[in-house]
Amino acid sequence: MSKELRGIPAARGLARGVALKWMSADLEIPRFTPDDLAAEKARLAKARQEAKKQLHALSAQVSQQVGDAEAALFEAQAMFLTDVVLVSRAETAIETGMNAEQAWHQACEYFAAQLENLPDETLSARSVDVRDVGRRVIENLLGVHSRPLLTSQTILLARDLTPSQTASLDKTKISAFCTVEGGPTSHTAILARALGIPAVVGVGDEILEIADGTLLLVDGTAGLVVSNPPPDLLADFDKRIQSERELREQEAKFASQPAVTIDGHRVEVAANVGSVDDARKALEYGADGIGLLRTEFLFLNRSQAPGEQTQFAVYSTILALMGTRPVVVRTLDVGGDKEVPYYDFGIETNPFLGYRAIRLSLDHPEDFKSQLRALLRAGTKHDLRIMFPMIATLAEVRQAKKLLDEARGELQSKEVDMAKDVQVGIMVEIPAVALLADRFAPEVDFFSIGTNDLTQYTFAAERGNKRVSHLHDPCHPAILRQIKKVVRAAHAQGKWVGVCGEMAGDLQAIPVLLGLGVDELSMSPVQIPSAKRVICNWSLVDAQKLAERVLDLDDAEAVRKAVG
Ligand code: PEP
Ligand code: MG
Image (cartoon, rainbow, N blue to C red; front, side, top):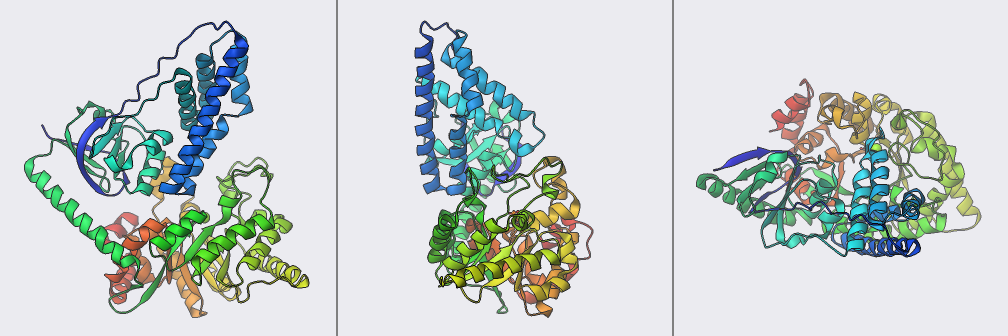
């Protein structure tokens, strides 16, 4: 009998395939009293060492297949293997006469439970990683490794997939993922999106009642799973799969073309980049440039800030890859949910309203100038643009520009070659800046609207908090009106405006942004071909009419309905 199940759309696309449940069976963890406690500790150390090697190999594989940001997940997992608190808890348990498997299991469970109880969602979600690492070490101790047997066209059903499970599967044989648990930002969802595999998460327990071998249809865009589809639905789905395939082929052609509307208006389509590998992807998917280089990737997961030379080397590599295409580099944006151990953030009740981005940089002028010098040196033969994040006041822009002048002066005094005519812009992420855009415009060369934070601060709804995620749609007229204000103010003074929040790659939002007069859209590289296709199929005049109409609607839902 045919059955429809609904879940959360996690990665777009359609798939037809055969169900295979992957119940990573609960591991039987043996309990015994070892004879030789020192040998037991050594056994645990060896299993941890093996796990470390496996995770580094997995990280290298994911870095190649998906990207550095996703690979970092496994490097972060590997760090748990040497965590002093975790390891010493397990070793102390062995000293009391417990075997390695039990000792490690109990230490990991204790650690995971502590993380789970933290109010910060990002930190509490790391309990999944601790359990994943925990299981890997125990599997090494027991010499067992569970992986599903895949044939082609498998639709994998699971309670939840841990990052290492998802990454270690043979992607060529998986048409889709469906899970009982998980949300749109769960590891499975993130990896599935990056791999281009449709996924529906959070479907509920019913998904595991489907027998292996059942024919399934998955719509990752709508969050729909259909088992034993009736012939008419199957035929219709096959047609849609075929036209989706054709669309992808068409989109691939758009990648190498400029994005020009039917009536001849050009929009720059750039990439958001967070690693050297992302820059390569940007080129592969046809980016006109980099609209947002998030430099944090250089600063996270290390014990001290990277020096000028280290930064210079990485910026040079990325700029060289991009040639003469524009590259907008955002200065350091840590704080909020991205802490680093070498800056003291104090105790913050609301980190997103606290010591973050430009606020921290202005407070550490020497570190800030070191980043600026590295950029100026790397940008000599390129179209380098520098952008300051989380600007709230005119005084901050002026201070940041003063420090940029100082960095230039320092290089000049040493007769070091540096980039000339560097455009300097700011991110519009705080409503105060959108409201005063006409006052900011004379001070900058461009604005780039960070709709992720702008939405968070407009609706007072934290971006990572699932309970308030219904307040997080940037298509709301409250955001659209701010964008209109910024574009007006900028254009009146001959400056350009980009959007680099997730909204820029949202196919429904693109015509509205186009109509509001946004000059550049910057998005994840894989989204570029579809975005270009949408732009090429609209006329600017129609987009302007649409934008005017939706500005007067009540909410984001109404705006999305109007776009269709
Ligand atoms: C934004 O806030 O929209 C943005 C692009 O910056 P980030 O997501 O890095 O905070
Ligand atoms: Mg931001």
